[in-house]
Image (tube, rainbow, N blue to C red; front, side, top):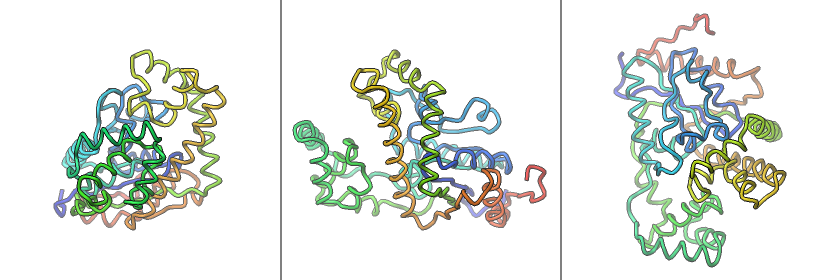
Length: 328
């Protein structure tokens, strides 16, 4: 396959419940591609329903990568994701197939496509421990307020309850004297892949409705029992994985800290807020071409638009796009 030295990659991004997974499946089926997940929670085994992981039938139809990589009590870093996803993309392209990256974890996508990583500077266990003690005494909100003063860009991107990332950002600032957002920009390198990024845009009211339906469907599929099973297996609420949306709220219900109705409402609210943060992240990227999915009959038509928009770009790399394919 002739190429310019970089594998061609199509990336599908967007907020939760925007339909990006279905579009990714259609693309992979139509173009002979394989999907590389960019979801920070789909890497965990046993967390299937709450992360909207591809079903066994979908994984049989299209090969998926970066799903079920570690157990819920194992550490999985951005650097590890970058390493494994990069290896998957290189291997997919070397076999003459198209890598289709699909996901809503913006940091993972930045790390993969642009070579972006959290810098190693500013690590100090004593400073970190002191910040964690302060969070226990004064609350996470107090630390987030301080972060807003020293690094507004990071504070806007990091949720006010994300203790781990707030502490990390404050740790970097205290040790180096520089905002972590500035260090991150400095470490951003040349794009690792020749990628085209497409964003799934959904009108706000329609997205809220999709989120409501998605949560109800997860409950019907057995999300509560999935969380119970994880608890029985010894995966406690203190784990990063179990802080994921759905697992945290139903974990509170199982431990008697919330009623079922309160857990459901918290889950829906948390999902809506997460979708908003995802859009804030992706909207900053000028490389993303946004597609109003409401203008199309379904994911197959969205996939056809992406194929038409990418045909020449793929063909010039030697990846043949058969425009008369019966799949289209």
